[in-house]
Image (cartoon, rainbow, N blue to C red; front, side, top):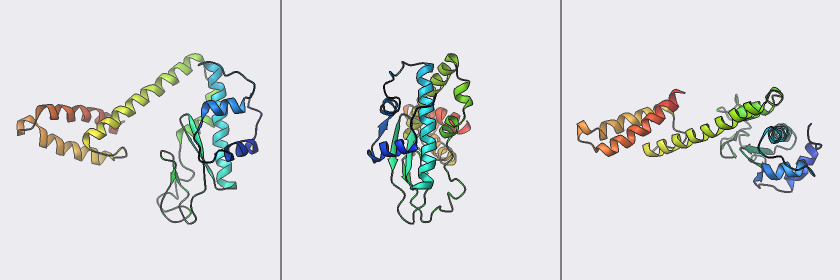
Length: 210
């Protein structure tokens, strides 16, 4: 059963908290008033799914009516002002910032609007709610935490290579070639440093191949 509130209620609620990070827990309590939140399990997932489905639909409505955006990620959501006049309206879903280029949609993003987002696609598909079981939910949660661990390992490996989080595969490979030449023990390099870079490369090689 969907919560008994509409986009006007959402608009008023978020408008009273402009720029604030609103937690999923606060939203669940606000939009399922008088209902005790269930513990971890299928019942909580159902409420979570209905909430995030409505949030993504609300973001679509904001985009075409007021120009505002709802920056949705993980367990937090934030109401964001429209892009400055003359700026590209593409929103970076990692940082919550608009593209800095000029034009309603710059040449780089004119084919990507609205932004492609797998999380949005998931919540707009009713089958993901209707077909969920306790066993399926456990697999979903386990997979989420595995991806979190994997991403932390990738970020740490990129830092070891001295590369930014958004480094391209080509840059990673080039950096490894340079590091392996500079630090290989057969070329007079430090064995400990070579092992450190080799371990990082093992993580990054699997990442760029996936």
